[in-house]
Length: 51
Image (cartoon, rainbow, N blue to C red; front, side, top):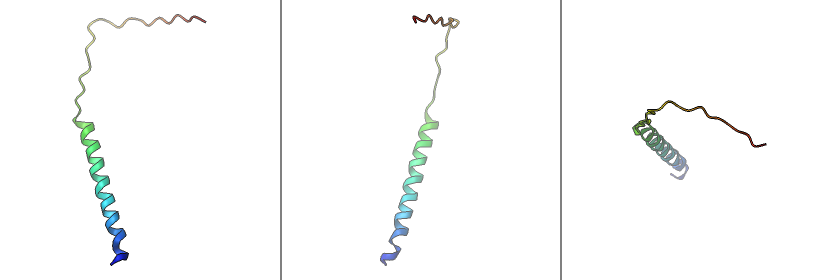
């Protein structure tokens, strides 16, 4: 029946949205970040304004 077609589009939209969100979430949590360790103490940043 043609009047039932929007239900199919709605389910396709929800399936696409859920797969897209799962892809984003899995990519976010699968990335392992290892910060670089600084061996020397951080130097003071001296700003010399020219104006």
